[in-house]
Image (cartoon, rainbow, N blue to C red; front, top):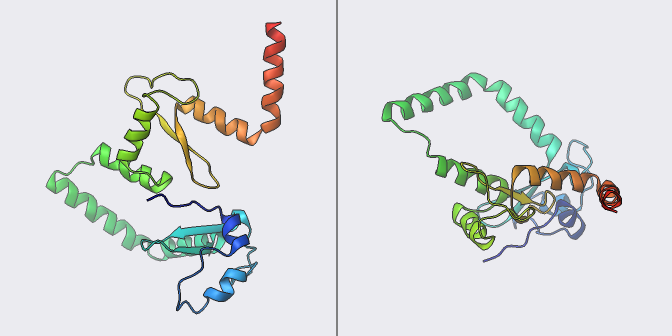
Amino acid sequence: METKQFSPAELIRNNFPRPREGNRKGGRWAKRTTCFRGHALTEDNIYVERRGDGTFRRRCRMCWIENAKRYNAKHREKILARNRERYRENKALGIKEDPQQHRGHILKYKYGITNEEYDTLFKAQNGVCVICLKPPDPGKVLQVDHNHRTRKVRGLVHARCNATIGWVERNPGRIERVIELLRSELE
């Protein structure tokens, strides 16, 4: 089942998806232009949290970061002790992090895809980069290229091709001048 990706701007503009029933602040939150602490709810300052039951929760990114910093500072020793304990347990059990499992967590967290979906995309592209049509270097994997606003995956690319895409997105006018320069050199 394919789920539609919404940009934060669409969520603000359309007030969609709506907060779950029973949420006291839900009706007011959907219409707000500032958070409860007064930060502007712009496209860049909205953090959309996808819940396990398919609903969304909109949060002020500034407040979320402030709360996380405050919590981490207050509970620093507790967090470090928990991490040390986990490390000791895993070391005692001889558990080493499975690189494939780690890659799966990163793919799911950053791009919303599984290892199987990555492999399917890789096979659909015949194992080559979407931009330069060359296979990855030995021991390397292709990176996932995605739209940062919608989080929609566009394809698999080399690291250098991915950096080029990012540069072009940030400087759309310059790419035309680069093409003109290269064409004039060929003539």
